[in-house]
Image 1 (tube, one colour):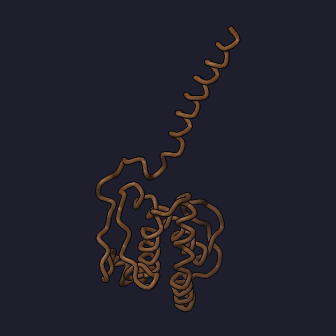
Image 2 (tube, helix red, strand yellow; image 1 turned 90 degrees about the horizontal axis):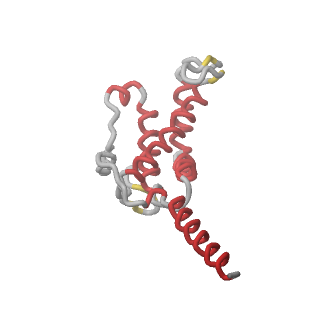
Image 3 (cartoon, rainbow, N blue to C red; image 1 turned 180 degrees about the horizontal axis):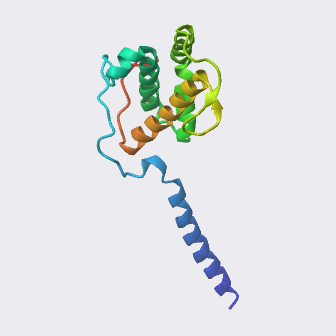
Length: 159
């Protein structure tokens, strides 16, 4: 009769282990969403339209983050880690965007963010924008099971 509790314990452990495997399904669960995968080419896959004319440095920074996020999305780890790595790879593009923006004599003081209501400035908004875009791009790449852009000499094409 004492063997009965061990049998139940084994059964409970089996069900618990089976349930926990679902926690690690993540981005390789086999479920994909169509329409998220860009066709990366040497030319920009996101030319930016009117924004490219108004703020070409912002478009260049976004394009850099886009390509790096899609390149890093297949890596193990959280989407946040891949997004931060994409941001780090594009620091020079972000710096250029900020320098040009500040040199044009636009508003540089603090103002209230229309999104969060918190005090902010253009440099902080550029960084926040790219960080959020990087995370979005990583999640898009994972959801669509997208092929990353071609990499040459350690850089995604066009980055």
